[in-house]
Image (cartoon, rainbow, N blue to C red; front, side, top):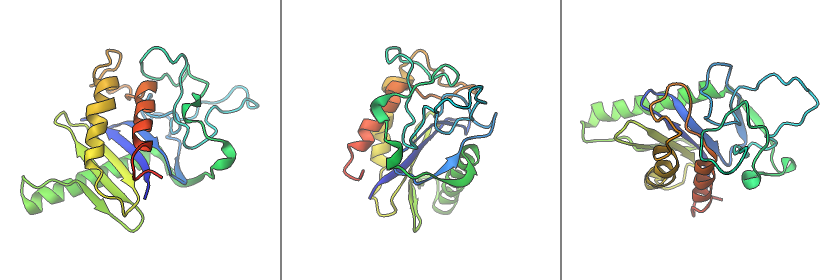
Length: 215
């Protein structure tokens, strides 16, 4: 059993955060203008590099954490952060990257569309008291936790993993409240930027890696 990835959507149906762990087929970077800044450096549109010989800071598909100072809790700036934090650094030779063929903005829309459709089907067939929490295919299991403010936490895992709804709730009441909601530098209702910051990403990573289902 293992955990593949996490998506967080705001009440505007927009992906504001992404992180992955055991993905072997990763999405292509989002197209220009298709993804908010400060969602994830690993899938943000790649700016044109004036120096083609310079090495990329993201040498691993699991390395989505970056920091310019490590002091101020703030949203990442895609233009100002050029060095990767060693907290999540993985040797390039240890990972084989294969693309899914989809850009990340397309993938995020598909994931949200599946969640919205299944949630509506569950409510129409079973009544308002019934809620959609997860579904399973032969290759993965999708888990959903939705807050009263409209934020949706979506996690993909191994198909045989038990329900991770409580884990998603712990992410919300723990790192999310601590480093996002209570962070005065994060605009919770912004349509201009995501909610990624170094402390939230590092705290979330430690929590997920400490789960018994993580391997």
